[in-house]
Length: 162
Ligand code: COA
Image (cartoon, rainbow, N blue to C red; front, side, top):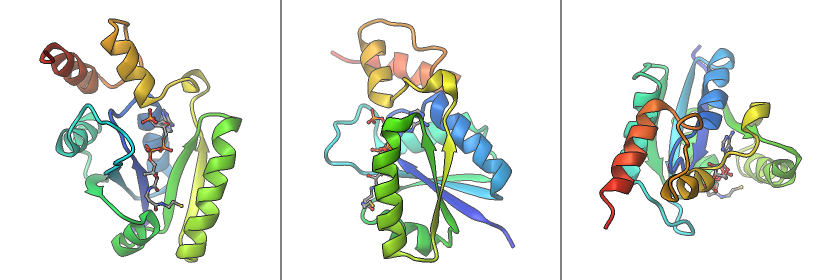
């Protein structure tokens, strides 16, 4: 039986922190589906389609990694896809309280679905998509913080801005 985990987030853009969690998740699960969320509370730099394409390209179109956009309840989306778990990365203690709350709520909504936490890379504990965008916008070097294709897309996107 193929075991699917769902990894959700805004991924605006995907960072090496996400890549590490997904890559390590692939050792635990047969397949990982990346659910790129439509988050109206966040202003995005990349479109949903661009974010999905960047994720698939970063994993070299590995057939074990699929992606789509999603709106609504994550627990329902995961359950509809047949996922057995929601995969989350914990960058540090400050992530834990919020993540635990979400895990409990998602389990309340879909009891058969568990949340699996993986510790993020120690060296990447300070990375977030917003910070990467901010630093890149201000001319800082983020080449070591994101996959090569994301770095190229960031540069192109920022260069095309008025
Ligand atoms: N490495 C690097 N960065 C990481 C990371 C990691 N391992 N884990 C998280 N981050 C960053 C993300 O890039 C993101 O940065 P940003 O805020 O600058 O965009 C930030 O940490 C927060 O990540 P996350 O908690 O995954 O937020 P998100 O907005 O990317 O996704 C959802 C949140 C989609 C998972 C959540 O809102 C959700 O489940 N929504 C669906 C609605 C729902 O079901 N609600 C009930 C929940 S119980």
